[in-house]
Image 1 (tube, rainbow, N blue to C red):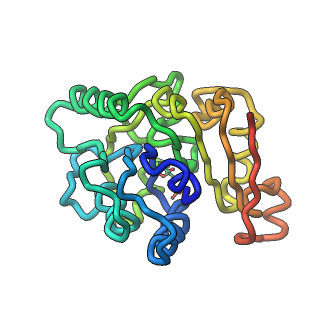
Image 2: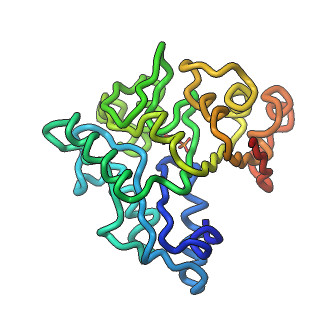
Length: 242
Ligand code: GLP
């Protein structure tokens, strides 16, 4: 990311929430503090937001991003875009977001994490996916995975969200996917080498011509051997599909 920002200071980034990117954001902040990164001309679009949560809700993804990234670097608030979970008209809000991405010239670098059920953004496993930014229902497993943001109170986790669609994500010029932890080892095999199916939304990334995948050792071992070795953290290995 730092290199991309240096090469193209006006870069348009797509950014995820979740536990996975937190160390990445921490590194970026460290580089900024060391004077090695300038974000003042970059534009960002966040992937998703819970319906019913706004910029002032401590549990919103917008606040998550401020806490973990934006409060610590010099991104311009004018060029930092979020879906508004409080918007009275979700359809209009999603259309506004798509238009803003278009106006910015499209996303240059889309950074992604992978949900435990194979979702990307909040494109949940289903019989079919929605192409563009839309309102969506969250599965129980996704609500469980997000409960940590709500003091482990599953009841407090919203049932719906707004999310970039899979086509919005695949329109990015370049994609980097980060997957860590042994619980995702088997899933990552299905994402990278399995059939392309809406039951595993991440599998649609196989259709993109410039995806870089970063796995830590735990996520890159077959699920059985990672269980045997029980490794959870070690250098990250990269794998490019083009
Ligand atoms: C959430 C987000 C996704 C993210 C996923 C993975 O559900 N909507 O964009 O990739 O969680 O989270 P984690 O990195 O915590 O496993």
